[in-house]
Amino acid sequence: MSRVIRVGGAQLGPIQKADSRKLAVDRMIVLLDKAKDQGCELVVFPELALTTFFPRWNMDDQSEIDSYFETEMPNEACQPLFDRAREHGIGFSFGYAEITEENGERHHYNTSILVDKAGNIVGTYRKTHLPGHGVFDPERAFQHLEKKYFEVGNTGFRVWRYMDGIFGMCICNDRRWPETYRVMGLQGVEMVLLGFNTPTANSQRSCEAEDLRVFHNDLSVQSGAYQNGTWVVAIAKAGNEDGHELLGDSTIVHPSGQVVARTTTLDDELIVADCDLDECNFFKETIFDFDRHRRIEHYGLISQQTGVVRPD
Ligand code: CDV
Image (cartoon, rainbow, N blue to C red; front, top):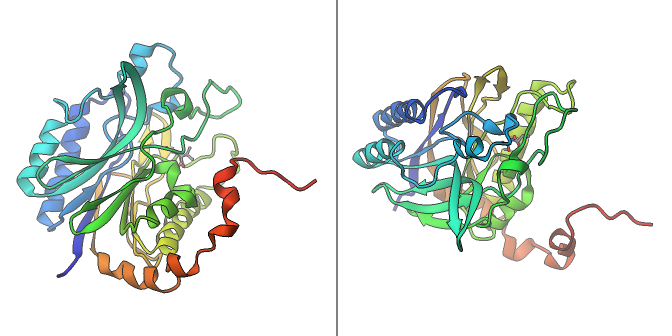
């Protein structure tokens, strides 16, 4: 039985602060329709796909902060996306800011979901590696307040049996951490879906070139793919949001680590690739056959400490 899935990577161009959820969802539906025309079975949208990348703004009013979050999913604004995808028979994944109630307490997460072809949410992932800072930082060229607005996700890096394969999710900064992919790799992941919002500039290092930031994006997703023998679909929100530039360079990466599709604009753009999940097997059975080659007796520090401890 063939396990080739035609995947659409649906990069979104900028979403301005003043833009409505409806506008974002309408744009996502246009991309979904294009994906249908091109025969895609699965479409991947970016992190925080429904709003501007609001952690760049310092806010203290909780109701203003909460206005960027969704309290249910699907909600009224997103229902048309779920409906259209179901009509097309397309599964999809996208990121949004989530408020959820657990044990009578409200929690704020940076979340992505996996939706099947019938419109059912079959997986939820909450971002683990929150970048940036928790209080306003006047030294930075611009803010990145994810640690202020979100809690560390409580899902861990799960995988799901989905479309004849094993799928996982992570979000933006997670892609820079080898642990992200390895935890999913150890569960046999065959395709990692991820969205990102990455500024073209480093707020703490003005000399850092955009080229280098593209290189680090590629390096992270290509090495994660190769070292775990998995497809990675890494999709950006791109372009100029209220004067703040975000990288494009969304990619679909083969388990060899090679890029098979890449966006060329900073706008709404669909990239498509036929992803054969069986092409993971060679890597998983040879150079990265974990069972034969991993040496866990030497990896203890990875889960015992967070920071660096240098010798005396
Ligand atoms: N949204 C993000 O997680 N962005 C980070 C930036 C801050 C470096 C990223 O890893 O791209």
